Length: 125
Figure 1: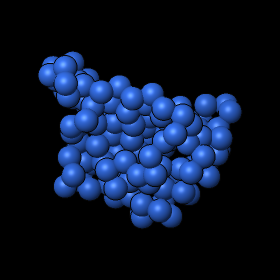
Figure 2: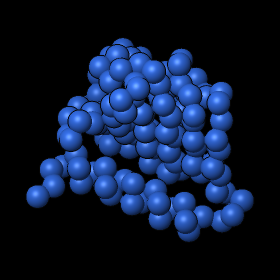
Figure 3: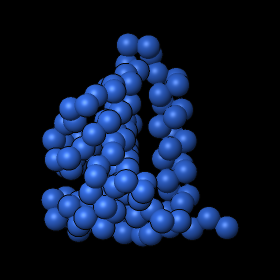
Figure 4: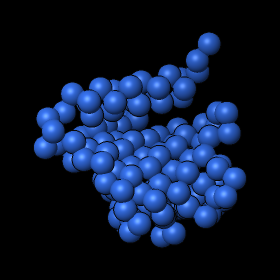
């Protein structure tokens, strides 16, 4: 049985996938970059971010990147810079931070050489 965090993550990824694949070609952007933004929809990005992949120029949108920071350091960064999350849950080795009533989600995973961070933004509010 799925817990709330797992359900929200799956549904968010599903809705983003639907939006991306149903988007007009001019709105669909996959941006691969060595230089990452400092912020993504008002959520901070770790200064050491590498291999950024941004999907879509319109909401919902997502940004995935890698950091050499370990998972605990990455979590601390988000809690310090973005503030206390409305919910913070750990599931299957991933930490899920939810902001703005679940409209902004940060998923931090250990990848063996640092962390993978996935930021999902459904809306600005």
